[in-house]
Image (cartoon, rainbow, N blue to C red; front, side):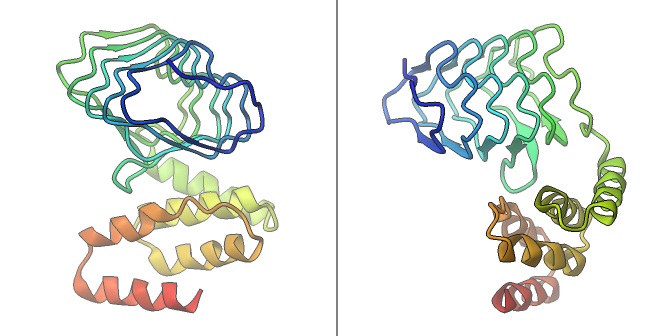
Length: 212
């Protein structure tokens, strides 16, 4: 199993061949921005990323069997951008999701769990306020950015929610503001989401990207 003693680590790449992440391995590592898992990973340990507030995970490994108790507890600004959708898609291999595993995982908008998962613990997704509430998430983000126009987190949230609702031109306005402020964008999903659109929309998005 792997872990770290540094609370200030920002980008985590787990080496190929690793099968487990130790309990509380990255506990309170509030500066982690991205994590890449190897396909060999089978276990994310108890509290592994507990209170890693700003974590961004774009894909869970295909052989993962266990997400243990409190694994992503309190990751209130986390983004789970699987396949560019900001939905949490868990692999077919997963057998168990522990107690409070995603408790208060704030940026979790959609969820897909295979029928092969045999156990989901109490409060596993408790407090995931945006889960299954796309319109509410959009409305909330627009109110936030209206009342806090200089807040980079509000701008990022508005960009993401507008893009999720197909309002790409409006989304790019806020994306540009985040880029100008030199913030971490987490906007990879926008380009991936464009794959599902028609040719004219993709061309328009490309033109807009080129202007940033």
